[in-house]
Length: 170
Figure 1 (cartoon, rainbow, N blue to C red):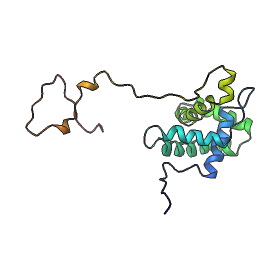
Figure 2 (cartoon, one colour; figure 1 turned 60 degrees about the vertical axis):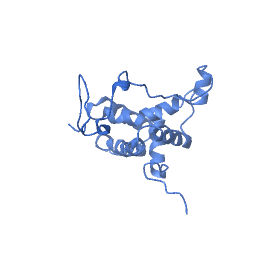
Figure 3 (cartoon, rainbow, N blue to C red; figure 1 turned 180 degrees about the horizontal axis):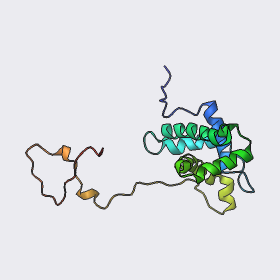
Figure 4 (cartoon, rainbow, N blue to C red; figure 1 turned 120 degrees about the vertical axis):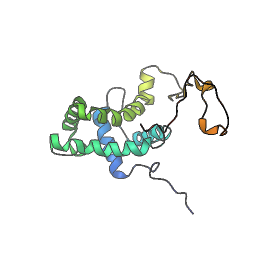
């Protein structure tokens, strides 16, 4: 039997790949040191988001679809259906409006990160290999003093200056 791939980690479908390429062409246009985005751009975004917080990739895919239709009220068509010059202007307009600026940043940031890691661009900038962005969790200063209260015995006593508890929901 084949290995099951969850929707959260499934490869981009052809429509999503098209949306990503059209958006990347407007958000990170080709230039002297950066080629036009390719299918590898989508693969790199999937890897970047797949290695981050659980659900980040699935959430980003939903935001990509949302951003694609966000241009309909202002330009009459999806971003991915607009010619490059209109797509670029629509994206700039969406980025300048408070209600949609966060959406543009959330969708474009992973694309910009992987495009900035292009071997051609890094070479032109004189960045030596390795070409990976190292990401590490910074330990909190108080990690050694933290204790999960669920691990205490029912009759165990603790001495503390501050006790925090709850679900975090409110």
